[in-house]
Length: 320
Image (cartoon, rainbow, N blue to C red; front, side, top):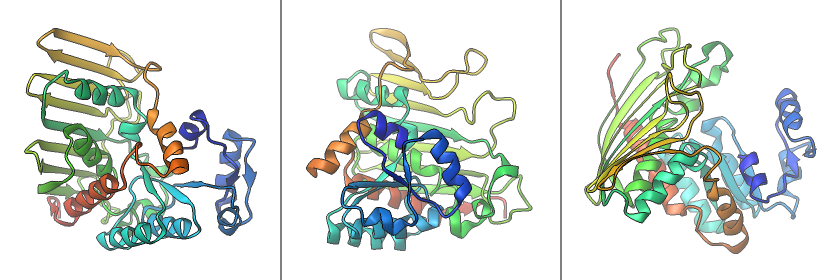
């Protein structure tokens, strides 16, 4: 999050965390940052316009409300909420403060092939988008995870957590302002020692314009993969298809950002690493300064979050 903002022209001034080891690691990456003694030291600094944070998921909304009430915009890692009640309270605070509650949906915003897929769709390269399928596998790295990672109240569930990337992408690529969750399910196949943990989830949605969506997310990336997860995206339009291999092209190359386009002009392959950039971050900076909504609208964020929470709440447990 900080790298994207700095590359786009922002200045990083403060870092704060009650865990001194995390601060030390952060400073090693950003040596010019100043270490704050408290969160209040940052919130009381009138020169700060935006606070970026990656708290435990269940704490993110509360922190965001505190930031916005201090007169600053807030940029949180996904997932932005773990309950519908948090979402509703944050809606009220955004309305009250006129501040921004922005979310780092990195699997679209910080992946060049995913960004280029959006550009192709806007150009009409595959006609009207009618179906999206998303795969979001992740590596568990169980031994290195903190206790809260396995606690449902803290992480919110797999569909509201890593599923948040998926639903945001569907709304964006299909141009939908809203959608309905048709079916969702979750399971714990391989982690019985953590009964509250979900290592698999999937869901099916239909957008207001009739476009459909299926996605699955899991914590089953094999140890032999060169990357943390083989994230893929399949987009079907009335006049063509797009496949995005975001992070790796298995057995061919460990680099990411591969896009395959098929339409009436034929078949085309794009290798997009270091060729597209990440416009979201510059747009976000300008939105904070100019009070515009070019990077992402607040309503888009809240709708994506709400659908994730509904999918999670209504999910069938398939392993209990």
